[in-house]
Length: 229
Image (tube, rainbow, N blue to C red; front, side):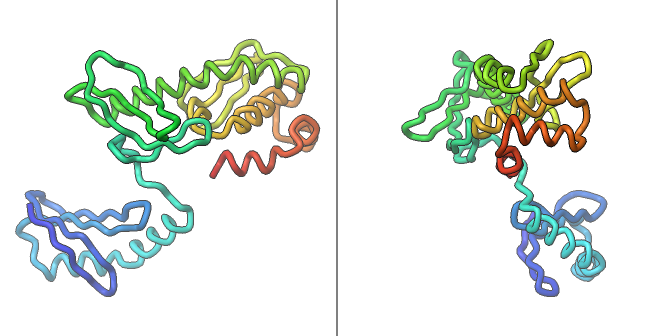
């Protein structure tokens, strides 16, 4: 495989020539970097034609990435920034077959992730997600007690899992919270808890629901914005 840095019509491109049959184009977050993979036998003219034919798509994709501030996928490697209760920590991998739990050094703002000798991104992510799950479960009882007193409703149960929404409430009174709330400022957990408890009164997002949110969590719009940053 060979790697070249080329410029075509003002676009900086990383070109990889390798043993493949077709050409592939990627525009990557967070900066909209352009990467092209091409077969070893592809001519310069073929590659240039391929890139030019997709210029409009490239520019549109770069604009989308920059405007929406799309982040690069996490690799769970040394030096990466991760968060716990709204605070940033730098990840440091520890090759350890006996220690299974994430360790936090608040003074140094370090998060130590124990990994076996042969670890994959998926396994590292799983270990860290279990840490966030445990952290959230520890925080829930106190927050739930506070929020049930505010709203006047008590859920049947509260569970934690990895999901797209920050929270979910079923008609039978079961509430589910996203384990990633452990990454956010604690006030975000209170907001989501109140939000879901309000669904036990108003099972929709109607004007009445918003009135409940205004009553029980006056700053909910600001907190919601902070949560989604």
